[in-house]
Image 1: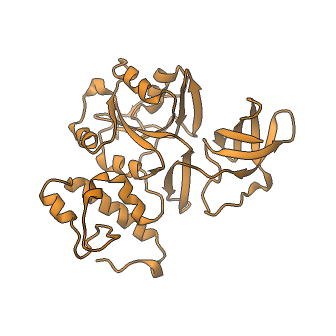
Image 2: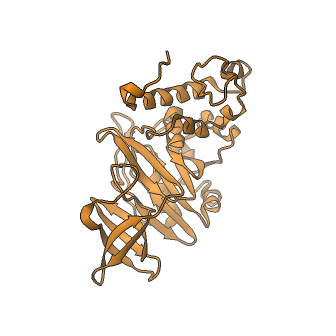
Image 3: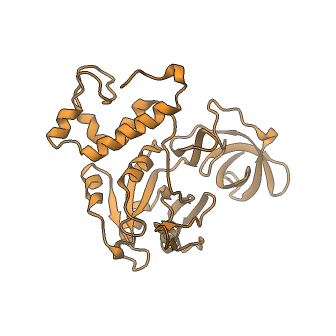
Length: 301
């Protein structure tokens, strides 16, 4: 039997039977799944699981089908990759302009943490103003929509972007992600105020949750204060920086990390690549290099 994972809390899962159209409480058979990659959590919301019921409302998961997309991050405490949402058609990265302030480098890392799907950028709290820094991402080809969960501004435009798709909502704590989902879906996710002392959000969603209503399906994920890009092939990071696709370098496979014959410095001088975005790209590469075993690290300066 095939199940779609709708909720995941401490290795206990809410699994929706795709054959029967009903929910089961599910656990992993033997507590360990055989996978090619070791991850912090082997099953994520959005995964398609294979298993069998063993009672009227309980089931055992024996395997997970290959994911076609995912939002993953590096779990600093456990020092391994962690999948937050899986098999989404698009990732909606929610940011705000003032409270908390817009952080383009956080946005860059969030984009790089999403793979196999479209990324849209949602600037919430538009009633507080819109940071001009968001315009760069629109010019780079990322769909951008400015909304206000409080006033309703832009909600219909956003709904049109979500209709008929599964969308993983991710964002910094305090940007109003759960409030926005409540406004879009009519759901009742817990919400919280931004901390007045640090201008940071309090965590209100402590686990990922799949919600669907009226042709819209979302995966609400826990807000985070920081995000680290998952450890993977460095070449994949370039996919999150479409402006680098036009680079014509002396050597194929150039990572644009100071290699001889790299054309990116010239592109920056001509205004074809934003210097701040390029610095963000380099920092991501450096963070991946630090996680690599010492004997495998390159000799870049």
